[in-house]
Image 1 (cartoon, rainbow, N blue to C red):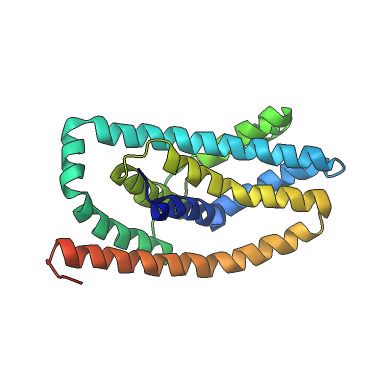
Image 2 (cartoon, rainbow, N blue to C red):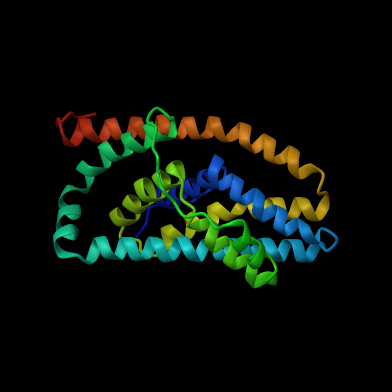
Length: 229
């Protein structure tokens, strides 16, 4: 049974991922796609929802596969059950350092080409879902750190194959829903909203990075050095 803190953490990781620079850029592309039909408010909202579903299902699939694999391979499963708390400390510190951009990371990733995006964008609502799935696979250092370095360990610790990845996926799609609604109301405010989000993202990411480092140090003190706090 997942605790409320685990559920909220998974949702927050998804939201933070969605407003990080690289995923935010893909969401801008998605909003631009949605904006092609700004004359139809209902279509804009439905397109945003289908895009979110595509992202959500992709994150759930990847999260479920990785989590299931880690928990079903006997050697790995036994190691994680015994040493998970020891792994979390250093891992959280590393993720925190990446979020604070103290450690430069070059991560090769998949990014759909302009031609592929154009073909998908001409496929209606189902094309929006496919676009969401493609963009979900476009991991960059920060999104990869949040997904593989934070969500997956959290899912493994709570043995959550579907629920936590689902909440993460929902979190990554929330801004697109908001932007889709904004487009339906007034397309002119989207640019200003993106600018505000980009400004807030930096502070939220830094706060999260500091918290991760603090929690990582806490775990290390307890499980490596036996300090009682």
